[in-house]
Amino acid sequence: MIIQNDYVDLNTPTGLMRTYIYRPVAEGRYPAIIFYSEIFQQTAPIARSAAIMAGHGFIVLVPEVAHELNPIGTVLGYDDAGKEKGNNDKFAKPLRDHDTDTQAMVDFLQQRDDYSGSVGSMGVCLGGHLAFRAALNPALKAACCLYATDLHSNTLPAENNEQTLNRAEEIQGELLMIWGRQDPHVPDEPRATINQALRDAGCDFSWVEVNGQHAFMRDEGDRYDPELALQCYQMAVSLFRRTLR
Image (cartoon, rainbow, N blue to C red; front, side, top):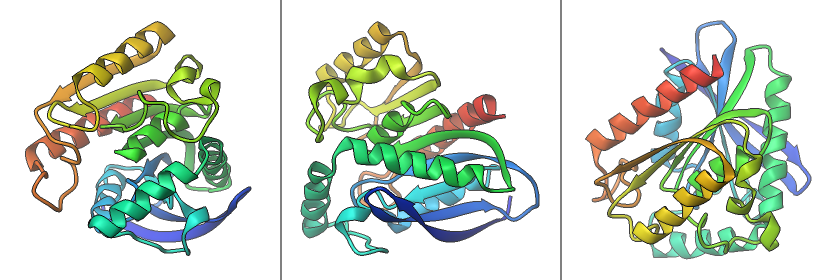
């Protein structure tokens, strides 16, 4: 499908949040995906990923995940300076503020005439964690979480009982958890910990491990695996077409 893109600045309890919108050009009502980026916010690879998903018949929202800590429109570089700033932002923003960001986007969707009424979440790296976190919101029917960081470590700012994985039993929608087996950020033991936690919580989830490195979806840099990326997009589209329509 041919798509178009725009942006909106949404009011949240912690300030304005720029949110990029991708949607099919054709008139109609579409389900939505909230697409959470890495720590670098909406880089060119993230924009292309959002466009791919929108082209399969979804409204895709890409929020600036650290909007409170940066000027509107900030994009961090895939370099040491960008990594340092992004990681500092990640550990400075309380998880509860991501929750209110999610609710602001759900509220925004409900005001749109082109929204069909069903929403899911998707994300990579930190965004994989935030996509999982978003699924705590009962409005979300599914989440595709790609190499989600910090789920097992309980290191993002929150009290222990508010840590994301500790609340997994609250998730009502379906989860698709995708991991790279060569990912040093979430190696074998932490993946096993997350898997067991989802089982203990009674989550409805699918679990996929591929021979890929961290950020194998990112179509810039030497870790990109186009074949694996295509397979993962297909799995995500299948999940959302089944659960959101």
